[in-house]
Structures are given as structure tokens and as C-alpha cells.
Length: 67
Image 1 (cartoon, helix red, strand yellow):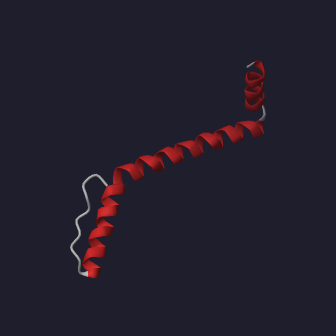
Image 2 (cartoon, rainbow, N blue to C red):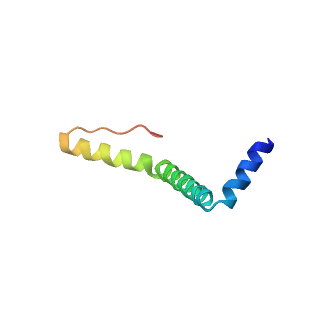
Image 3 (cartoon, rainbow, N blue to C red):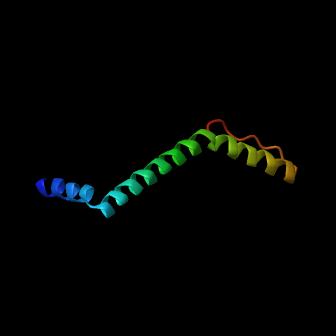
């Protein structure tokens, strides 16, 4: 455990390590925002594509509720 703490301290003291930590946090925030956005609008987008497909092919398909 002491080696892990020492490694973390060395990363924070080193400018390159600090930049890596900042980019990692930024990447994690972008990933979380992407997952939340897909979760919120995913069904709406799927239904829109299903409706468009139905109009183009002349079929009437209703997507099941909840995905």
C-alpha cells in the first residue's frame, strides 16, 4: 500500500504525471456524459429511426415500450 501511495505522490509532483491525471479525469467525465446522454435519448432516437424506416418501406411498425 505504501508503494501505491508513493507512486501517487510522485505522479502529482511530476508535471507529466499531473497532466496524465488531468487528461484521465477529463476522459472519464466525457465518458460519463456520453453514457448518460445515450441513456436519456437512446429510446427516442431508436423510435425516430424505426418510424422513418416504416415510412420509407411502407410498413407500420411500433417499437416496444422501453427499448
